[in-house]
Length: 404
Image 1 (cartoon, rainbow, N blue to C red):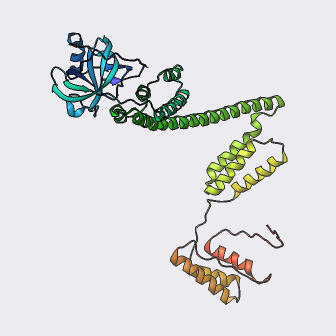
Image 2: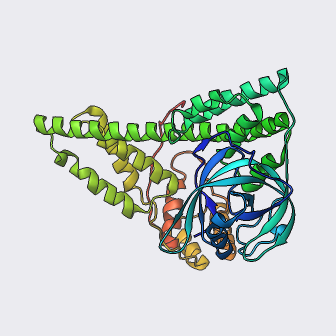
């Protein structure tokens, strides 16, 4: 079990008259936490030296110990270089021993101290410490900073339902500005190094400014969390409404005798889509229209139009191809058999197919045969299809006129 702060429970004005500074204090290193003056907080103690210190508290000359945060929480056997230079003198309010031999402590921070020198590390750390007193700050600027801190802190409390509602009243009850900054700092969700910087800042006005920056950042994060949660709830509500409406629609259709089977052929249509191997664009259009069909009444005129359109899309042979027989001599022979004359046209067709055969490029130019009716355009196309082994379809566009 590690030495780790769990929660800050309250702020109580400490009695510091019993501390004789300049003497040595036992040092309890803590990980992943910073204790502030007047803060009351629970800690778990499990390391050998920490347990030895707790068990020796009753034998100490004075009931205070030094609480100092570690720089690296992974370090088990700490020395002065592993600790921040500023900590707090603290009183052990309660110690509970577990069956494992570890302890749970309730500590109250008293005043800021500086660790001047570690004098021994056995059986636990002891160090000479000096008391750090903060300057008075009761001017207009300090009052304005304190008001801003109270306002933002109350906004944070409002956005954190896990905090007790009386937290706002507690903030209003603290008039001393340095203590107000310590209360908010103790409850900040901030890294240990940032909290240690707050502990090391003696000037109350500067400390409030630093706390304001961290608290404002936390407020923005909470506001963003609130917006995200609202969006999620709105989306969930929309999905729930859609589900309820669909269930109601299903019940209405059953009452009208319009069973789900009326749309049973749409499942077959969807299976055809899956097997048709449509291009991406065509597949998107087909599924969009299928979704529309499922929402329409089977007997409506629009249903018939959309259904015919989807059938037409699926009837197009998107993925069916015929292998070309690019035998140039055979092509020339077929052209000569089917047509007398037209040497220039037949020569151009043969040249075109020869280039296609050499380059094997399916994205080459497209031949366009132009001429009045009856000169052989369609028959030439039919001959080329017969020569290369392709299926031939004649689509007459004569008379088609569409300005769109």
